[in-house]
Image 1 (cartoon, rainbow, N blue to C red):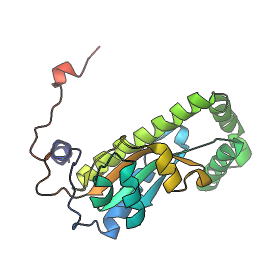
Image 2: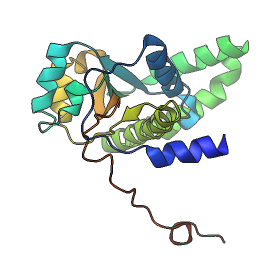
Image 3: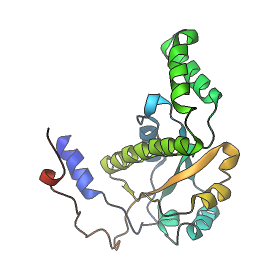
Image 4: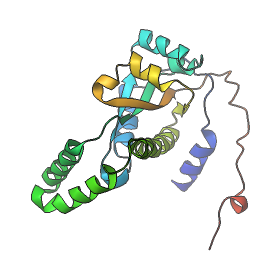
Length: 211
């Protein structure tokens, strides 16, 4: 497993050109999505959702607000990682009720935990809440990139798009969601220009500090 992990992470890179003829199986896609669902988040709240964009016409519309990046259409699947747009008390009540059901607990025994979360998060300014929510999505992205690498699935994490346009085209605001990141996944094209470039990373001596 150690060798597989390091090999896979060395092999992965941000794919510039996908092979549109190669598709993930339904089982592969579900494994990727399950890995995302199991991602660690602050308090375990999971205040995010993934939108799987399958509609070809809709994906084509997203190219223009992705600065012409064809990965959006050519990858097997396009995942849009979203945060909850507006938070309220119900998010926390729903989570505590789910926790109580899952662990066979009395919901009232979790009131202290719920109040701690509410006081920690809902007292933040709107800007602070947005930043905190987006950080959760980046944790999810890191987990997804590793999962895809281990499954020999290629990917391309993308910040280079206009979130407001994604929100409009995908009707995300109606679902209280806001796009944060795009992640095309699939298989690299044989002539992908990024494939042969050596990975550039600091040495461990320049990266790890022991105190």
